[in-house]
Image 1: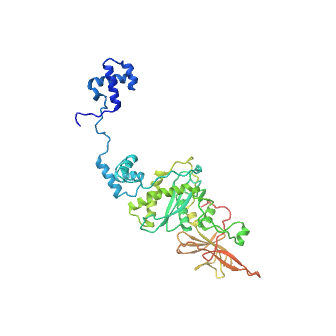
Image 2: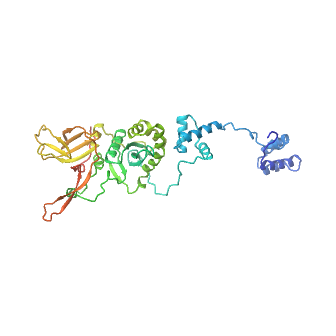
Image 3: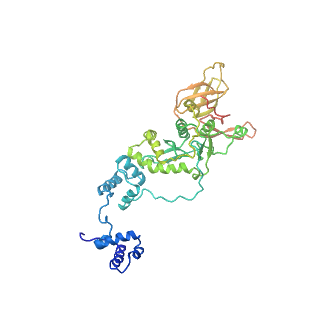
Length: 430
């Protein structure tokens, strides 16, 4: 009210002490410690009290509107945006979008107070993480990647789930590649690896879980595997070995916690952003990831490595298309043709050989669907594209010629034998 001023108990106490000073009952140098100020400040307070009594002790800005106060209309606008347009964004994400999309710059704490005071609860509760032994990050980019797939309803609760497959660099936390696929599979991992190789090169190692696309989880060993001392790898495992990438299987989800934590962040942010952009299909989402989301995400969350030099090894586009493929070992028939299930690939006569009948060859299906047949590192036949299918891994029994007529289990990939582990090291020559 006009003519009144609010004062604190501290100011009332100071007024009582200064009144004694003005009446000569207390020396100013003795009053300064009681007031809790220096002697010079005590002189200022004495002068102000003598001129304006108790009002002289109040701060000059008391009762005035702070110059940095935000208008109430801005608060109303922000709350309306949160309720209608950004209803599924967390506080930090919402603060960033206000600045990027709406031209409204606020601190996260101011926004948080506005939302909580208006009864808008946080998107999810943040619980403190359980204590675990943390493995130090690798020192260089490319020394180790962690990759995994995350099945989720990425396009909203009303649409069917799909899987986001992603690879994270251990040293920086960079999202090196990400891709939506219908389900976690060998094809999805090979497509993800192809993206990594094209964007960065060959990493030294990849840390992963024990998904059946990556690790043989069966205990069966064929006679040939026993003689070689190693099980035939999965299709993805064979490609990693051919590229010289060390595959490190994890024994728990916590062991590859950096990619797991990235998926938590992506589920928190990616779903909301795709809903805002109107993205509802895998094809749209993959284009959007490549067009800028991955780069923007890394600018926001990646950290600098301990050593700036990259450990990625360069690789040519032709090498990528050749190596990153499904591969099967097959035997050429007497009609100079290779049969893989219902597919027949005719092999023409070679320069120095009229027939390849009886020869063991390597048949590759590349990620564009085309086929090629190789004998002793020489391509001897091609075939047009067919539909890419997840390799069917099954078991069948076959009778042995022994008198006991026991049956031996053999593993079959699309009615053909899987390719054996690569021999020697992968050559990086173009």
